[in-house]
Image (cartoon, rainbow, N blue to C red; front, top):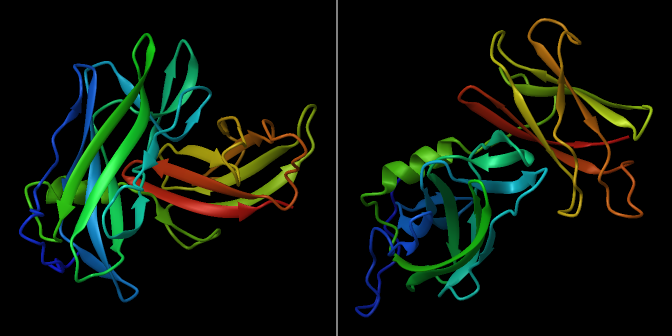
Length: 273
């Protein structure tokens, strides 16, 4: 990223490296600032939502898996923010007595990209966050934070940059890349039909695959690896096309697949036949 200090803040609005923490001994959340950048002729302010977790606690990804509650963000109270986009670092599968969930077991930063309404005026990000944390019991949590941004780098630049690098890269199906989504076919099964997906990955690198439906009310199960079902350098997964909303069909649906292997992560959208 190239730092672009773009906004001159009014004297009453002073930029800071971070907001105050909002939370308790189990978890807390705050906003942190990073340098601005540019994309498609638009200036983008970069920031992050930092969630701090006590040892043994977890929180959830945008799709939580068998159980759990995904974080819900409200940035509607922000000043001079046209859009606020939340980016999601690659998650992990977490198995416990409640099943297998998807999320984070350690402190996490969720990057934010903010497009100002007016680049000549100050931006203040105001966040209301509802999320859940779990140890033996799960607790719903609310956090609020506000942070003026001026697009300059600060003490938290490295944390936001590291989190951005862990966000899965958008990639086309059958891409010529070390990690890629290959063949995907739907076949009949004893119960619901299943989707078979091949993931190309370097030999010896295990792959974790996540599948999301076209709308949040799709509750697809976690993809199951089929050991030995594909050739060298390819790992095959089976996804039962179950948990669809009432009246929905898989035919023509666009599924978002996220593959994670070692330090690599990709996101590919496929359309089902």
